[in-house]
Length: 314
Image (tube, rainbow, N blue to C red):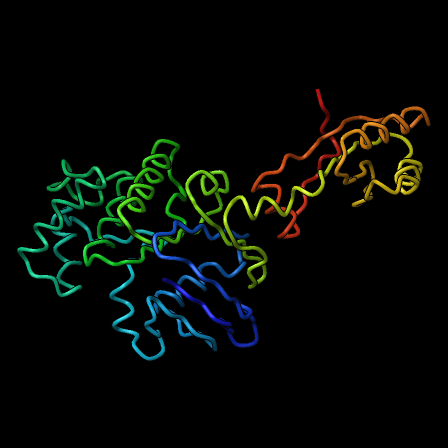
């Protein structure tokens, strides 16, 4: 369906996207995650034809963006991370306006609008002003607008940003419904738990590069070889570090002012290490065992850290 090959984007001397390669199969619901500034939005905008890549190629269903940009754009429905409306425009007029931009006839726009508003649960808002809708309704209307020309690929940039919990659930259910109808969907989000619930596969982006990509199970499998444990230490961090180094089955991950982080594939070895600390009069203030989750792996792959120094296992 979608192929990105050695895609590069420079802004003057700043490398925003550093030669990424990606394949999203037809019918997939693909989640694109990464910290702010990772290059997600730049990649999305290049894919949609809104930004020109510095180098590399983009193909949808074998159509090259470089050779057939206009034809390729017809394959894409794009929902940006902001919603712009005209004052006093009704929902019906909003859909008519964008339908005309797509070159769709008036009668077809009417028919498409009725079906799409039913799909996004906005049929009763047809004659209401767009600017009177809630943010969640506006986002769903934006999805309906992006589907007017029946694209094969739907791309959404942070569609759940700023939505309340109910609106997020409605958006998730809508996207899963669209996937069941055969649409290929790419969604960028910072809400990792949401992506893990609805996406078949994800790509984690950091500093302009895709650092992991695959199915959710494959991605999580990378973090299952060992478990990361953060241990709070009150009095003798050097002794705690030395004891860890004396245990070859335990990997000393990092040492901070009042905590030590270790890894091991065996819980028994970790428990033995904690027992050694206590028997050597090292005061343990708390133990946090990180579960294998998308959030944990994301933090590891993007190099972000959380300070657990003052947390305990109360």
